[in-house]
Length: 399
Ligand code: GLV
Ligand code: MN
Ligand code: MN
Ligand code: MN
Image 1 (cartoon, protein in one colour):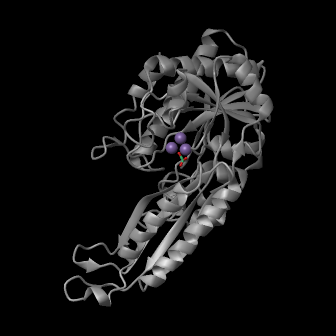
Image 2 (cartoon, protein in one colour; image 1 turned 180 degrees about the vertical axis):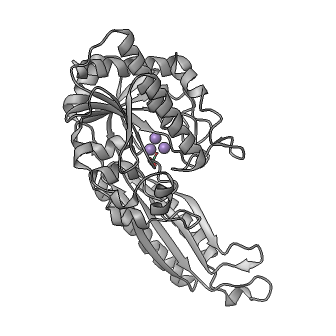
Image 3 (cartoon, protein in one colour; image 1 turned 90 degrees about the vertical axis):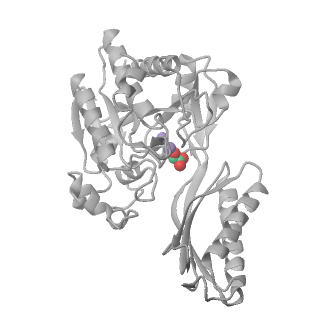
C-alpha cells in the first residue's frame, strides 16, 4: 500500500466539475462518503472506531485512555479545494499504522487516528469547528445556531449526520485522551520547494480571523434609478474590497482576503439592497492583525457613508498565533534532522489543540506551492516518505 493508492479510492468523491477540484462540506453526501471510507479503512486495520458527540471520528489502536498519542487531520474541503488538504494527513496516518505494524511495534500506550469535522469552516463559517467544540473554545449554543448558505442550522445538519445536537460541546474525557497530537499536512506554500526538501516540521501558525461585513443600501430598479439617486451597496462593497487589499499591502507580512462576496438578491437588472462579504486577515503579530482590522472597519464606515449606505462588521472567529510545543518540535527535528522548521499561514486543528496538549505538525512538499485550489499536489514519493516520517515520530512517542 501507499498513501497515493489510499487516496485513489476517494479521488472521485466530492469532485467539483466546475473548478476541477473538490467540494466536500462537512456532512454533505461527499464528506459522509469520505467518513465511511475512513471508518472502513480503519476497521480493516483492526482499529476500534467511535464517533464522539462533536462528530470527531477516533480510530483506536489500544484502549482509549488518558495520555494517548493522537494523529490525524480532516476530510472536509473548501470550495474548489485540492485533493490533499486534510486527506493527506488522514491517509498518511493510516499508512503509518501499517508501517508500525510491519515493523512489529508493540505500542506501550494507545494510538488514535482522528478525523475532525468542519476544519475549513466552509459550511458553517467557523474553521476548526470540531476541535473548537471539543476544547470548549466554541460554545455548543453558538454552534447549534450556526447556519449554512441554504439556511440549514448546524443542529439539523449534525442530527441528520447521526449526532445528537444537544450533546455537542466541551468533552473533557476525549480531550484528556490526547497526550500528544501530531498532524501531518500538505504544505500550502513554497517553503519546501525553495529549500529543496520533502518534509518540514511546523513551528507556529499565524494568528488569523474572519470578519463578516454587511453593507445595506436601497434595492431599486436598474433602469429607472438615476445614478445620482442610488445607494448601491455593491458599489460601496467593491470599494471596501479594494481598501482591504490596499491596507494589507501597507503592512509587512500581512494578508487579507475577500474570497466570498454575496450581493442580495442578486439580479442583473436589480440594484442590490444588501451585500455580505467576508474578510480573512492574518499576520504573525496578533496586535498587527487587530490594528489592520480596525483600519479596515474605519475605511468601510467612511466608504459606506460616502455611498449613502450603512455597514456593520462582525467578528466570526479569531485564532491567536499558535506556537507548537517546543519539546515535541525538538523531538521531531531530532528524528528528522534534514527537515527544516517552518511556520505556516494556514489554520489547522493542531493549532487549536496546541493550547491543551503538546502538539506538532509535519508538512509534505507541494510542488505547485498552491493550495485551496485544484493545483495543490504531492508527489507519490514525498507522500510515502512523509508517512514513514510520521511512523518514525509516532514510534518514538509510543515507546
Ligand atoms: C484553513 O485551511 C485556513 O487556514 O483557512
Ligand atoms: Mn487542512
Ligand atoms: Mn485548508
Ligand atoms: Mn486549514
